[in-house]
Length: 152
Image (tube, rainbow, N blue to C red; front, side, top):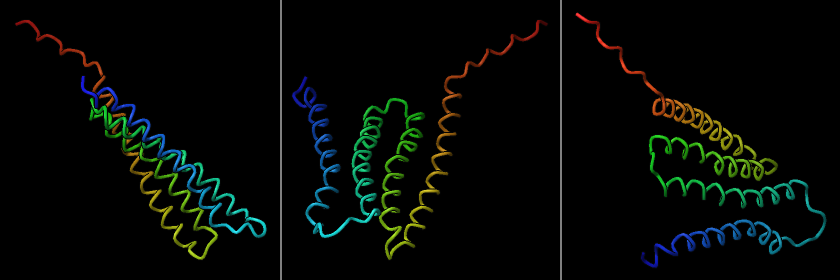
């Protein structure tokens, strides 16, 4: 066993944890460095910062799940639709975060387009879930053998 095979999983996990911490801490760091702390924060800004923390937690976890499905792709007929469904989590998280960010600003018209793209992806996810169900049933169904031909 080579060194990269023994420690590859641990290095991958460590790098992923570091990126998760960076994504969680980045919104708070930006708020601390760029806010002058003069006056009270708007409720919309607080909601956006809290949503930023949750997006920072959600993205690494869901991307980890997607990467693991891709890494151990042993049943592609079933796993490809599952991966497409799993992409719903980061897309919804980023979409909701962007819609919240732009909803009470001068760019509030942009959130309509962002939500429309999300609705289109939701239809695609429903389609892929049905594809997954059909493939799973087709692969696991027990088809009875045909009856023997009648005697002559």
